[in-house]
Image (cartoon, rainbow, N blue to C red):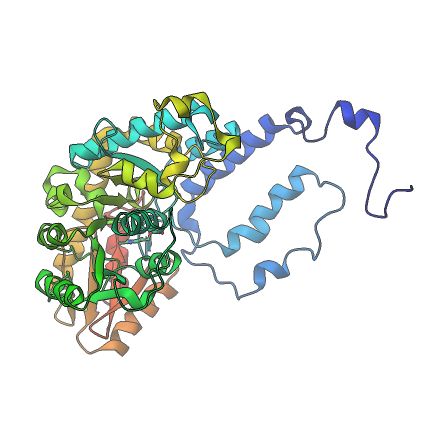
Length: 492
Ligand SMILES: *Cc1c(COP(=O)(O)O)cnc(C)c1O
């Protein structure tokens, strides 16, 4: 049969020397050039405007309609990074990036990411790459100590830590483990009962909880309607009295409270829910307590900020993101559970094709049972490189430097009659607004973001617009915060 029009025959030479074999691409040369490119980019990042000025569709308009038929020279591909990609990048590593939350990266972490890609391993089971599993267990135990987390989260006790892609996924695992514990592992046995009003599972989080909580509850079949948003106090932290009374009401109505997600550092304002007080109610009703410390948790690297973890020793699970504030590039969420058996029972399925002696022997961790996907990347490398290069002290210095810059900014806001601080916290996030109202606050945001030298984002607190300054870029220094301040007060 003649080949179909889009087929081309494989000749004898191609069978012997595949074009996809490593030696058929000059990886050494192009790799060195790419590393140089990244180094130049990071060193010269301040020459770019923080936010790109492209219209929707601009990137796609630069690209050909169809992929190339024959392979292209690498030089042409690499040149398109400058032509098409860079003009449409938000420069998260820019020292003038004060938006959302930091997504800081570092040289050691980037090399860990590169090495992970180069090794190309799948760490789903211990046996599919022992180093991938054991290094992860080891650095997660390190992290547990570095953050002052309870010893029962260590792999040497009944708990353990695992790297997830994001806090959203970590919380989803907590939701599923909590659901299974509350239903006698019905999800893995007889299936969930229809939510007919009796025995319905209900979850709780503060009105300021991250959107991922609702999303996770929807994914896990609990449903957004069964998420109770607990009122917050003046500082935007969850009201533990309101939580306790909502739980009592639900129990009285025949519902089954099964999960409370406490935020240590809400996304809007970094409010810290009273974990210890919430834990009391959770203990009385068998409610799984999960702590979402995605951004702020990293502050606990420093002894003087450890108070944010008060009560975490009573939690069932906890997560924080080294990919936000610990110089590990996205993605890297650190998730711990108090009792790994519950998590593993909730998520474990063992098909025949994954059976192996190490797993049957029970002496190893198979992290596929600790997460949603089967496959997993070797993320521990970038965490290991980062911790070893900077040391505990280097990472503590980073946090302290950012907090000191935030303190300076808070002091300036306090001294400026036209501005007011909103829900002030003593860490790296500064929330403020103009006393004249939303239009005046919006004008400040617009002025800052039109400058190209700084970028801030916003939130709403009690229905009023708030400007958020999140300090956490790797290279941010006093002069960048000074420049931002000049923009905020309209001096430039
Ligand atoms: C950033 C953040 C999240 C979401 O983090 P992902 O890792 O992107 O899922 C959740 N909760 C809080 C408190 C956050 O700050």
